[in-house]
Image 1 (tube, rainbow, N blue to C red):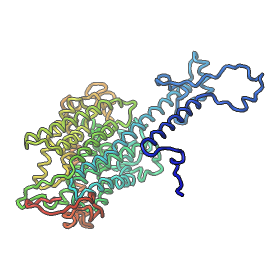
Image 2: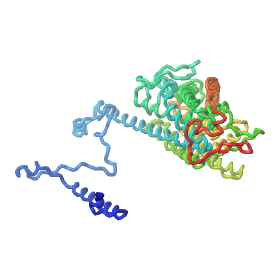
Image 3: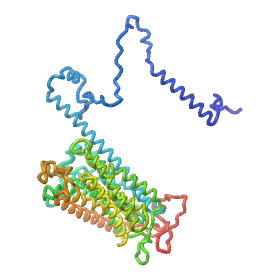
Image 4: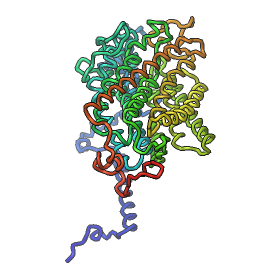
Length: 585
């Protein structure tokens, strides 16, 4: 005899009707439990209590609730670094003697609690915005994969994926120490928003007083085992990883994966940290103002130069050493179009990057409390406006020149505007941001065609988006900074600047030509170091290992030969040559 199933034994109909009945019964039971559970709990001991003890007594007041949030947060909630700032007895004493003057000790503990709260806000802000920047890796992966051909998709997205752990390890081993190891001991000091990170007080290696790199914090050693330093590490690590990702687009579709892995340690341990120290670590470029009277020294709020131009310079060197893809140029040397296989993927990736930029730029205040950090509202709006200007000008340029609204160039225009505004975002007005973005959108179009014309094959336009517009961002700061923000930046103008108290970073159009000079010097150093060091590295790497994939693998597509898996196994992709010399698939 067949054993009855559970729903048959309880008489529950099968199908949608049974599901509806079961949902109805569960809902009734839930409501009953809620009603019963809201009543008072009666214990047996209470029932057995003598009648004399059951005399009416005043019920304890129910716990106070605060649905509006206006009454929460009192002295009882004040914390300092050691925990609660005041004990319950001390709070009662304060209440009983509230009309008497407080002692200095009481005031100091109250101020300590305020300081703990401010630092906590800034650490949480820095971590959350760092998480947003980390998510930009997904945006880069989608943009670069979408702009490349299908037969290389798994390989391209794996370079975007693996640069994250490889770069992180390299930055942990040496990059962070070289970049920030002497920050607190430098003339500009550590970030006040994170408490000054005083433990980053290592020796700075310099030549003729021009600081090049720090020497403390390798492997995040015990001497820097500090909450603020670890927070700074996370935030700066994801910035470094952005730089390291940029060349994966310019060198896509012909870069041997093993060679790529080695490169990941070079850029995270040497290339990025050295220039980063010069600008953000208290090095020689940051002190151009203090030492030579050039404005506030080299200023780069969130990394047009430190992050993007360095990545673009390395990308240019890599694309030059690798050479163009097979079929990119015909027998006459004319470039052949090699369209990406998934434009929607690239556009979605662009949106992810634009979203992550709200961590990139506003997050670079390293806090939301104190020291002018409420500027984050201005920074966020400037970031948006520049991206809009870049997308619009690139779209219209392509329409006027070729008669079509090119989605890939519109995406690159938006990214170019974001790259360009990254350095000046904290120092300019809304109209300046739009102008900076509009110029960036035109620059990226002109630059893409320029590099292609002279034989540099950059499948995704990384050199143009990040390299060219990273330099434009540095220069634009020297033109448009309006002086309303950045007083005492890099140790310059703590009391006054240009004869005015509170005057911040100021560009040429607002009366300070020396700031533009500092930005131009920083731009030249960035180009020479990023391109030069990478060009030397890639050529040395060629001497000890192959860095370009074989001709056969490139024609077939790098997915199966290098990764062992096709990105799109449902489709048969053939790598053949068209009559015009292009590569199909």
